[in-house]
Length: 420
Ligand SMILES: C[S@@+](CC[C@H](N)C(=O)[O-])C[C@H]1O[C@@H](n2cnc3c(N)ncnc32)[C@H](O)[C@@H]1O
Image (cartoon, rainbow, N blue to C red):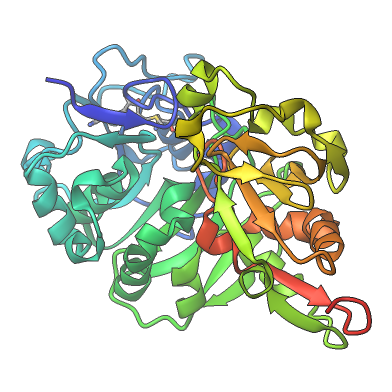
């Protein structure tokens, strides 16, 4: 029976191993000086455990992986996986009785590291108990469609002893998606979150998924704020941003809060949301499959070049007679602004339509403003600040997406003398 339904990449077990420098960085984040027994669920080739063993040579290590072919350790020159200090279990980390299998009651776990698979496992009833024990069952809108990251987090919390510390890598969905807002609020209110560090893309092998490290303690703690950092591409740690708990439940990523704090409100100009200003904001109606099979031209994100950002372009080559049964599909027309809804560089795909009336794919938003404001809107969407806003409000582990409910909140600054 397959255990996986969906997956953010192509590997069915989500085997995107952590690069060694990120593993070392992660274990450096713990304040604990001499931990005794470490758990590594979904250990893969042991990158995180190896880093832990390098920092604390006397530590006992428990590794768990469902994949019988994992090859431990990744650093064969260091004979660190000797029999006494390392036990490995080929078992499903999400089974309800894992505590018994690992003998956690008699040999308590005081530290855990984890980089869970980036997948959505096929739901099993025992997941309810795992989520419930960690306090997360009631905060998920669709428990049956939960990221493995959340299940692995909950399982770690169940297995760890009181006051134990966990360093876990969570995918961007858990850090930013609105469906996980209640989960984030519960996490922040139930456990002591020491810090959150957004990782640069390229931190894992074979994927450039976005993720953050979360360091937390299994301790009931009242917290007013949480420290959020980012690891820069040159591997230096940013200064922390102190984020209050309600803003942290909103989103936990450094780039969002950095942008929020550094955006200057231009008070001399009137600020209005795109929703209030635009007559229409629509998403195209044709799916990628329909675009592929269509016998008339449809503008897709691949037809918007990053180099054309902010320009009014002639799209009349996409204009064509459309069959009658397509009369209701979303079309762009001269004066409209087009924005890519998905893709790694969506914030660079923003153009205006100078000429042409044509169908667009569902990966494109069509924004229709009055003739007096459309130039201002395009310029501000395509500006450096506009692109930074777009990037901070997009979400997604691999390819980014910009939700319509975010896009409509884009702030437009109107100059009262020109824009009416
Ligand atoms: C993202 S990789 C991380 C590997 C390693 N911890 C690292 O950081 O390099 C996730 C690992 O989880 C394992 N895995 C996937 N589903 C699992 C499950 N249900 N139980 C145990 N391990 C699982 C995969 O085989 C893979 O080795």
